[in-house]
Amino acid sequence: MSSVSSTIPDRKFLLPFVSRYDFLGVADRFDNQVLDTTNKWTSIASGSGTVAIATSGGRNVVSCNTGTSLGSNAGLKPKLKIGLDGYSGTEAIAGMDIDVIIKFSHAWDNGVITDTTTTRLAISNSGSSMTQNDIIGIRNDAGVPTFVTDASGVETTTDISADWTETTWSWIKIRVLKNQAILYINGSEVANHITNVPTASVRDITAMINNSSTTATSFDIDYFAVTPLKSVIA
Amino acid sequence: MKQEITTIMDENGIKKEMTVYVVEFFEDNRKKRVAFKTKTAAQKYEASLK
Image (cartoon, rainbow over all chains, first blue to last red; front, side, top):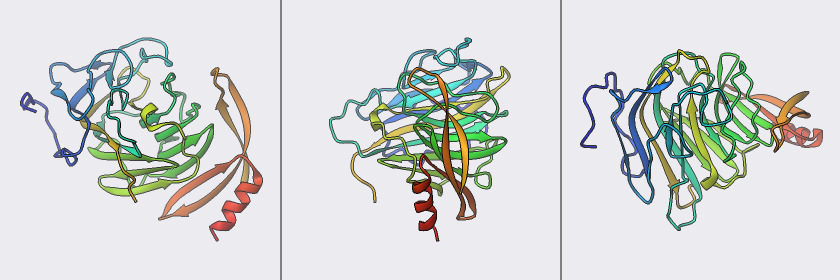
């Protein structure tokens, strides 16, 4: 963390999970479609894996390149993709925590997405619909922030509009366990799904955070972390 | 419980329509919706909420 700059304003949170992360990135600012390299802080890795910061590629990647295909890395939106792809530990993994402290500056289509399809990262940007199957995440349902789990197209949803304002700094945690997904916002559990949870291996899950498909979008990430859970949590 | 048509995407990215049965309720003052592929499963779940 020695290279952390003091130029990023409006930082609201200390890192609450610093002692237990395996992958960690800090304070990357996306401005419109590009990573703001001037104000970008740094990215560090710990544990058994690595975090790569690049403008294209697969998981463990901050991706913010431009393009026309929503189904590729070259989407028209700033986005962050993280997962356990680089995790090299041999222990059994019972689950995964995805932590991010984030603030959206403009309208958003989909907030935090865990995409269990390793080859298809696209999500719909057509209004509130999200046609992709096998999802854990937050989406915009006609203006209503909604936590969704989707297994083969069949969904469980929870209205979290009373719990989250996307334009303020928030600590979002999604705990993914076998047949269960729990959403915490600022430390409080706000949704707990045990139905229609994707069954993919935790190691194959990609977390993707993106903003609206329109060109004038941005979001700030104060911290993000992915933590494999190596024992079952009651 | 209500019946709805949802759109899913198959492995080839082709959209398909599918009938689901949706149970809506409030949990901790938050509106929750749970969909099922079969009416029987939805009815069983709905009964478990009572």
